[in-house]
Amino acid sequence: MTATLETPAPPDAGATPPARRRTRRRTPDPNRDQVRGFDKLWVFVFLLPFLLLYLGFTLWPLVATVYYSFFDWDGIGPIDNFVGVGNYGSILNDKLFWLAVVNTLIFAVLNTAIKLPLSLLMAIVLTRKWLKGTKVFRTVFFAPLIIPVAMAGLVFTYLLNPSNGALNALLLDLHIVDQPVDVFANRWSALLVLVLVSIWQIFGQYMIYWMAALQNVPEEVYEAADIDGASEWQKATLITLPMIKPVAVVILLLALVNAMHVFGLVVTLTGGGPGTSTYVVSYFIYQEAFGSVPFSYGYASAAALLFSVIAFVLVTSQGVFVRRAQQLRKEYGV
Amino acid sequence: MSAKTMPAKPMSAERILSPPHRPGQGTRRLRLNLVAIPILLLISLVWVYPFLWTVSAAFKTQAGVFSGGASLIPDQLNFENFRRAWVNAGFSQFFANTVLYSAVSTLIEVVKAALCGYVLARYDFPGRQFLHRLIIATLFIPVASIIVPQFVLVEQLGLLNTRAGVILAMSGSAGALYVLMFTGFFSTVPNELFDAAKLDGAGFLRTFRLVLPLARPVIAVVVIFQFVSNWNEFNIPLVFTLGQPELQNLAVGMLSFRGEHSVDWSGFAAGMTISFAPMLIVFMLFQNYFVRGLAGATKG
Picture 1: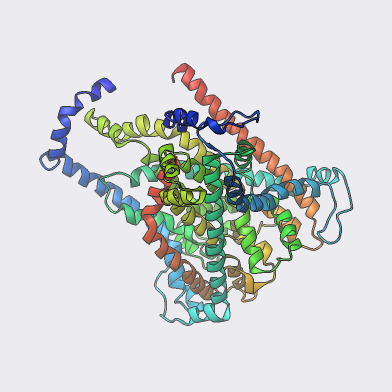
Picture 2: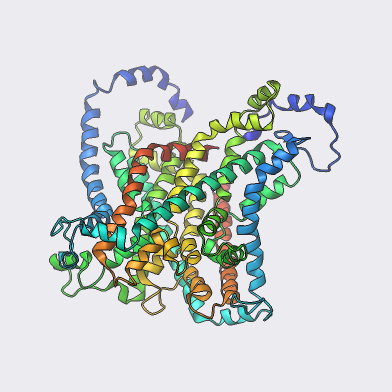
């Protein structure tokens, strides 16, 4: 898009060549100024804050994680106990790690599969012109985002507790159950609670993503459809969905990746329990690295790296899959 | 389809005039609202229930919380819980820390992303493409998986268990996405504007100060989103303030109600009410910025 927007630029770029001293093999970018003289310093100064933090808190930690993962290191003293792939060997046999991986993936998929369609539906409903009070409803769905996840988790542990929580009080009053239900007593119901509470919390954010995507659909298209007598359903399926598809892929990726980082909710809502049955990977890493003495930074790093690779492969293959599907559709005109 | 839209031209004038005259339109809208609003109200009730419960529990006695069940009406109206949370449980400290962490980290993030995004969008320098690709490649790295080296780094800088350390970790690990947002925005600014600035003799800094105000929608989005996520940040403050209650933010400090106070629910509810009230006000004030700003940012 920028290329088409800036096509009139080349004549101007042609006007500057007097200072043409480019001996670099790189092809100069016609849309960007070449940096010369004193500006070099400014470019450097502008890049510096980001680069420093990026180097310190993203790039170096990535490299260090790989490095630590080959050592048996508890964070104290020098890193000298090289164990090769020993950590990886232990992790491959660590049942708790694989349980955590499976839980994380179940959580991420279930969470995404429920929240994306529902938040899209809600975004479509709340952007209808005929609807009254959209601002109030928008605020309602956004509200859970402003409380820390961990706090939300604590509130729900109370609301869902079997002895005097609101859920059980309601269920008992309505005679739906005769015995209080303890949703945290069993792995599957505890996982489901994690998924649902997380959706409750994050719903507004995805609704806003969808609303932003919907705003990019030009109003005239809908007006034209109105004239043709299209129903709301036809407008949604034949205009809205196809037009927001590119953004939808990005939102899908964001949703999946964010869901794989679930941490705070697990800490406060289930604490990994009952037993260790709702461990997720970030909680596993936290427990290994900081949870109990002796800390095992090396082991935690290996686990982190292994899961990052698993997640990366899954997410990118899914991205490739989506692109392939879109291509096929285009080819066959479906 | 385009053939069908052609005759729309003469009709559009009628469309502007028509709404009050067309009989079906008004009642159809009313009918749709009558169906949609009750459903939405019901869902909304479920959605805000945890909030309402928290606010009402903040006024309840401990016994009132336990016997109240799903009821939202407090058994009494006292502010003792608030005092206990604010003074005894150290909420005033948590609150001050949260404000400090959120404000400073957000500021650092906006500044570094805007500066870097601007340079990436406007200037060609060696390694530009490489940096751009690197940022995209590392966009989705989870904090949890690289938190151990971050911890080691802050420890080696001698900043462990200091506020500066927490802020550094919080503002350091986020922000790649925002750089891309700024880059996207600044590359849509027409070149003519820069040429005009150059003709006027504006140097590097003057030009930047000229175009920066144009990026206001992007700045708004970054500030709002990052402020909210910093306000709620849990993983980094938890790890970087282990056993240092005076450094903790609300999200982490909240856990102390579970440990030492053997879950003081009414105090916890009061503390939570204190912590979400200001954010709710901020959101209601800046609501429109969210959607409008995000839409503007995704266009770029």
